[in-house]
Length: 136
Image 1 (cartoon, one colour):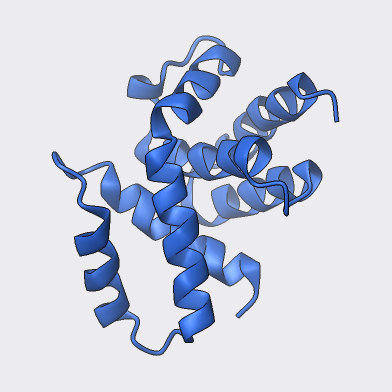
Image 2 (image 1 turned 90 degrees about the vertical axis):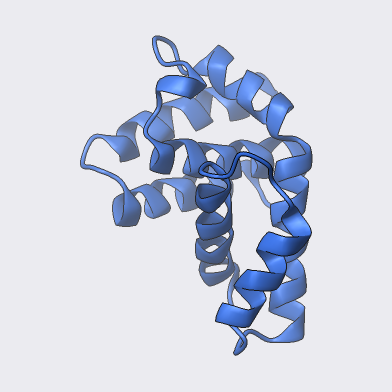
């Protein structure tokens, strides 16, 4: 499975997490793996690692989103956009295996599939600012 497909699974998990009072990543992953039993072991492992790392760093990720999404706080963003931004910021700030431009582009593509028509430009603008702040 390509990373683009894995990213959609990660989006599903991050989006689902937003509706949970207490996040138990092990339970969420176990349930997800039961639903998607056809995922290869490598793909399931990649999805689990990325998802858990996003959740582990969610406070830092949200702080970055708050500082670069002028006029929009994390608690006011649509849940789909927030999940996509969390993945994009995570990939830019915490995952050196993914070039910043790829992280931005993939987040925009996710927003075209899961958000409204205005989301892609907003997500692009926020993530370009985040990437630019790193000086890469």
